[in-house]
Length: 387
Image 1 (tube, rainbow, N blue to C red):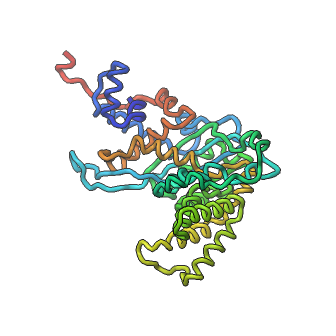
Image 2 (cartoon, rainbow, N blue to C red):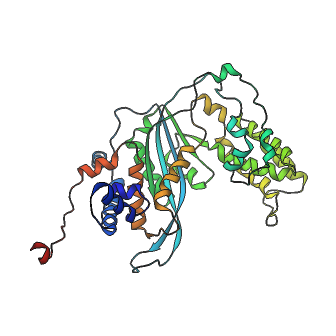
Image 3 (cartoon, rainbow, N blue to C red):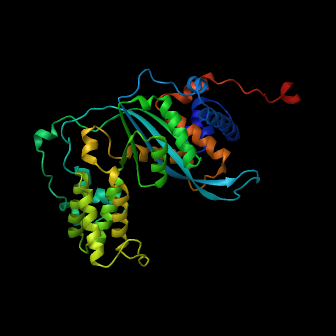
């Protein structure tokens, strides 16, 4: 029941799958009750310290990873007030906190293994999609600049990007500080702090870097390059009227940041703003296109210490949080929908625990369900049923 509830879109669908596939005729309310019970048990175990948690939920690896990567990001979930009867009362959007802790393959390099901007970031259609902007003109297919630098010989080298070996997942309704503690406990049990190479990736959300600073200060902080790219693309569209010119401007800035020249990009944007009399802190009119330039300059300035991408590549560290973005989508598949409302906070917390456990690569949900003790209370049968 719990696995069906974790992997399908609703308790009703879980009940249907159980009946049609497994021949188990149980009601959706029963599936919901059992899933919630298990989810709250998982939340209680998550917050425990020591051996009890290790044996019941997390199986510590025999050796620490060579490369340990921690990533976190926010999601969205719709909630309702508990104890108000049937229907939706006190509807609200709440932020979920999500994290993936990755054991990854690793290798280091004497030189930058990919000094040129990847082709994926030189495709106008793909970049527009990554930046969540309108699709560029159809004629823009010919605008992608030719790759410079390494030729066919370099292309034949083994890929440098680290690959996922084992992923464990966390998701919660907790505040960012509490969630940071949950991440640290998980990382300790996975022996992440013993890894010789450690990285922490995130986007521009302030709480991501608060978690890093307090709980993972020894991990190398890395700003997701794709988020920086989206700011640069929006900025370029504001700088130039013609798309062909804007695309060329975007490519120059993106390539410079990829190659470690973020300071030069910031200086260029600040000069452009100064020439137009726009100083730091000035409030522009709503929908002023120049705001995209202000936002890009501020974003790059705030995160320039986390944008030394050539160094990260030489160290064999990831430079995008694509795996984290994928995890958020996987969590949202189960908890986010037009007619999905979760009791706040217990119902929401329970389904998040079950979903996160099901998405872990270490089989923790299966292991827990196979070892958990029975509930101490058993529903009594009615006289008719007993007869």
